[in-house]
Image 1 (cartoon, rainbow over the protein chains, first blue to last red):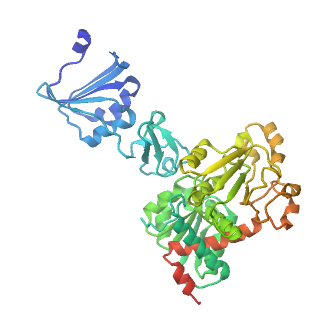
Image 2: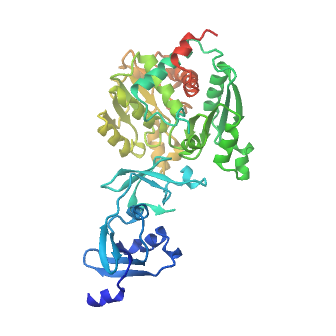
Length: 151
Length: 312
């Protein structure tokens, strides 16, 4: 375990997103727009985790996300842990919260939905938080979040 | 966005539904009026549907409105790549109300969000068709004198049948008992059985379709079993005639029982039944006019009182 910690350098200021399921890691990268960042970003993939077997971790230097940005993660990866780091210390731990409405992030799985055929923003209502089901505002199609793809 | 649009009846209260039924009743008494004189209705049919379109256009014409629009999407700019948004924005400049049918689900709701004039959904893919539901409710009310405590039998394609799904949601206010009669391949989806359970609607499922199973019916709502819905054509051949309503099956029917069918009929109801007092599907089709007159007036802000007082 000691060696693994050494793989990822400590962060002076910034945000650590841990416990990302490995298969969702690159979706998280896309969702937060990390490829457009100018500050150092460390991405760890397929790391060992006692809790989840395999996980991903992202450290973003000198960046503090808004709650709105972070809550988008709830759509694809609801159980991540978030730490805000200032001067090498964890000053805040956050949880991501699935909002009642998901706007513009995900794609409706129904190919006959208007949102897949018009230049427009998608909109979903969360119908069951426990089960993680969402319903398309437009075509009423219901789907589990685990089966959903990003725009 | 204009809240007067009618996209779905799913969220309508019992009061609102009964109000629209009363409005349709006024138009049944006197369908020809000039209450919409000076108004322009646009019928935008991105998918052909002659029956629904003619019914809406007749409704508008009989109330004195003028009608513009298209019946065939091939003549529109959609074929040149114009978005639905641009078409709706353009037509909104000309018309007071838009009636639209679209092959994509959610199209009518989206249209209602981008224009200030009311939209009436005349069918969006497999999603919603509120004017059909409204005429069904009106027909049930007209034939039974009430919507309360009825035994409603839904027969045929209960899996893909949009009309029967909407009927269940609209009837939830009125304590119905539903009976579902369908082949396994076309049985009522779990989603709607669960809907019944969560809304306290009692229902029973039957496989047999005979004089005993339907003896208790107030309404027998029959839908078409479509060949193209079957993955196994042998299965289709096996079941298609078991959902044919034959005259002897009416031997034990209640005197008030009425048979409904959204039409077109193919081979679900024997022609000899047409002359019995139970046949109500042609009356049902006629009611489409009154129900659509009511919907047009409602979205244009005309009240039941205004219709009652209107002497023109």
